[in-house]
Image (cartoon, helix red, strand yellow):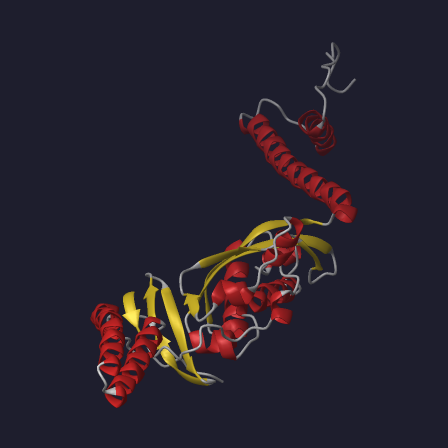
Length: 334
């Protein structure tokens, strides 16, 4: 496994002055050599012309060593296949002109169908990752908004889920040398980790017993699931030198084939819960009514009449429609 080594590149301004001086001296050497040769000193003229070629070649080679780095960028320096280190100093810099400018990825890898290349193909654009990255790598935070994918939760129910991941490169050596294409690797691993995490939890509590156990579910424990996804991504992306800053679920729903059935189930649970509350309230109201009537001692009801009154009150309080009152003009016992 590769490990990033930091190297410092000197400022390019000093080397720029040296390079300009070489470019200015080289034509003077050429003219001097020609004039010397014409004056009869052929040997000296040839040496001056050779020196001109050497100085001009040195100036051209030095010109190839200039580069600039913006904040949030790094340059990986590889000399004839040997990794020398990574420059993170921003600004106008100069380094060995023989450092490679094209690293790590082949055209075959560049043409893989990642979400980015698919969009480019649809637009008629051919992107080469060699030209895009070169020896420079962005260390800024990036966002990957994944597509909706269909997976099975812990109970086997098909669900649709999507995530957004904020990530950045923290080890340039691992990103370039330990994986073929670190961007495609992030996209693929994100989908794989999301499928794995989604299969560990149920979409929702299936009954009251599950709710009482405080079991983590995808719908009710978004923060816990997102944290589990981040931990899983950190573990898988460590070998690519990528650090996951945040991972969040952006979409969560039952798959269309079972969505209607699950909606009816949720509606039934809501109705049952509402009925339960109504019955509990009605029982307490009936009990209170019976106690209030018996407190004064003026109304004495036997068990049968109490049961009849409780039944009537329960019908009135728990019914879906308003009860129609019936006046009893006779005795209570008639």
